[in-house]
Length: 469
Image 1 (cartoon, rainbow, N blue to C red):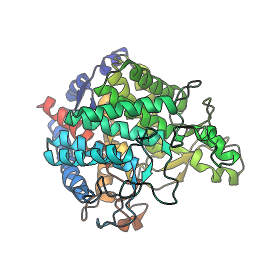
Image 2: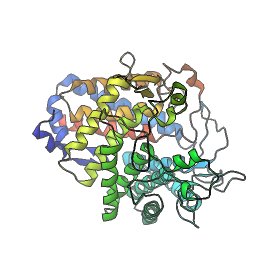
Image 3: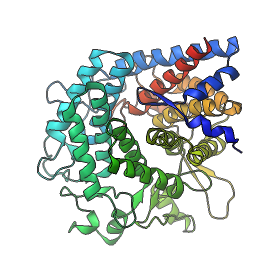
């Protein structure tokens, strides 16, 4: 149960965009002020900051810069040799701009400012659709349409990451052209993707901005049905993007949309158990196959499972949104966020080795969850590290968070971070030893999850250390 005093914990200060509970850290400092604990956290902070700079950012930059065609290369072998088509996806390109912008502010380093500017130019000049508006989902390496490929489509998810990147770049550079493009993208999404009847946003759009179910696309009945579904993944990243934009542009309509997405995710998409529903029909009816046959259920696991990584990530994103909105007594969001991390720890955490499993499932009639995929994806571990440390500060009396945070960092050092070549393996080597030679970069594997986690954790531990001193 929460004490009344917990309300005061939502009065927060922010450092470079990080949710940073200022009063909370002072309270936590008294609980963590013994020299041994302080020294241990200082050592962890120094390890994390060193790994961020030396093993992550130095591995990606400058090798990822496409100096020939602009933007960033996507495909790299395990030892950082460019390998593959090097297509340009809006998510990948945007995540690089966000990461470089944040690193520039974190380290006060002009090298990252130039990298972010390099990426911003490609977003503006090549990824934006000057005819219909919105950002393309996919372009070839030169930033052009690919012959024979249906790459003219757009997605709310991709445009959300563009907003996230542009807001971060504007915060770092003060370049108003980036802010104006972020504003245009927000209004484009609100006009084309938002559901005026049921609220929220539909993800898949045509180049012109039509819902696929409204277009004459050659889709079968099932594809047309799915195209009007809503999903947790695009929803949480729209919340993330709108929060980032509101932080630099406190517009009244944008505020309404941040609050709308926060409430939808917290009260509708998140279940009573404390995990996200992956897909929902247009009217927010959950999509579930748990009562179907085994064959049908397995065929549809993609649409219906428990994703522990998204749950712990969403806990952080909801608290960040609540803070940026200035909701000073938002006990409900804090309570739901805690429940999400608790559920992941109780059901998706490897008590023996550390690390969060990838997927679980509540089968019909079962009171407990079953793990259906034991791999430990890199991004899941990054989001877990961030949320565990945040919860350990929000609830210092519950030692499980601090203990899990420490174990998670040890797990990542041993099984996830490539100390020889730099970067992170796609999956933890304890469950997937073959990943030692897996690709370090691809359209979907870039450095935003791990960069954010390591920067956030460094800031939280550094603030604690300064208060303890």
